[in-house]
Image (tube, rainbow, N blue to C red):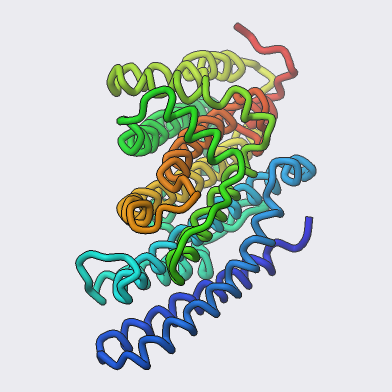
Length: 397
């Protein structure tokens, strides 16, 4: 895999150029000088075209087939985090272009440079979060999202005896399982709200649309670029899943939607089942009783669980922001379809985006719990615990 760190730096630079040029457009629009507005639009188009060319190349590095080539789980997790980060940048750039299209009249509706300024500010804040990380865990940079910087980690004093260290370890395991269930439940409900009106046929069509080709013609200058940014984001997310997971995706999503329909209690039970919430903790509790468990290994294991917790929070933060931006783009998508028509099923593409996020949320959660059937992006709770507690392949039931 190429040096994705350097490419990410270039992506951040070029997306910042998009934000800066959108600022100039806002200033030009406020002046009322049509010539300045037209020049600012052309400059914005040029910097966006430079950005998306780099972004398309970069997103190709994060396909499932590329990630599985990485031998270290930490590298795989870093790669998937970068994939989610680039998809988020694409969508925030799309929101900036949507607001630019409003002030220039390509998209009709209430016109306010304030909303364009807010979109630009949001994009710049996200770029700063990615440019100035809050810290690192082994083999991975942590972005400075509030959710990450507010995370409290468990500390074990060197003088703590073995029984106390074991109790701290077991408590940290429960915290991780609870975090997985609670936070993924929130993400799934948020995504579900955007597709709750779809029947089984539209769900199937949405998935087929986003998994297959999403090419099509659409009019305007800013609008087609807005659409291309959305398409690139979804291409990255689709590539992250890999074709191996497409076959069962519709069935997995329909099962999840059915559980969400039953209410949050049913969804929580469903997630606990997927993550083997009870069984995992039971096994770890049995392993902790072994006389062979070493105090120093427990300390190392707690540090590994702390790092896993931060990885989980980072992934969930990225996924939450992606869902938020997909939601922001629903309204302009509806307008674009009404005004331009064309051959691009933009409503199904966005619906497919929410469905992709449901699937990614499920599979990533299962990966962190070590219950995912096809994905192994990271050493999860069970793998870390086996290593820490000196357990072989056989699990005690």
